Length: 192
Image (cartoon, rainbow, N blue to C red; front, side):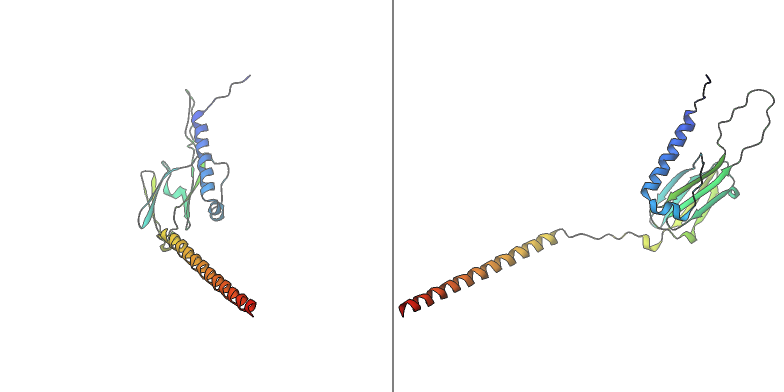
């Protein structure tokens, strides 16, 4: 029987990536696969920080050790795709023990944005392994707030009640008059 080496950090990282992907797909299912093609067999996702300001969105992507030329960043109106590849260094070890816990290979992350942005006017800066994208908000993305007048329904209900009472009064008055007229004509007919 052979022993299988358990790597809990690698499994936790894979679980985190799957949960992130699941939440991204649940929150924005319509926009995930239409704009950016999905890469398969990926084992790492860069960490992000997303901040919404009044006029823009600031997205920071942590990609330590990757040159800017090795990154592929694409921006649409409602999502950002970050892709790249960690290149494995070629080394030869003749003596001693060699161990590496670094992840190598391709990565891709699609980040849904909370509002639409002007994707033609994105500004980017790379510093110390962090890519900072400044995404100006599109004019149509400003949220309009409308005050809902809850008393309007009460006013309408009160007006309807008044209208019903008035109609009932009119019907009762008409019945009384019709009854009086019928009684008078019956009395006149009997008197003849």
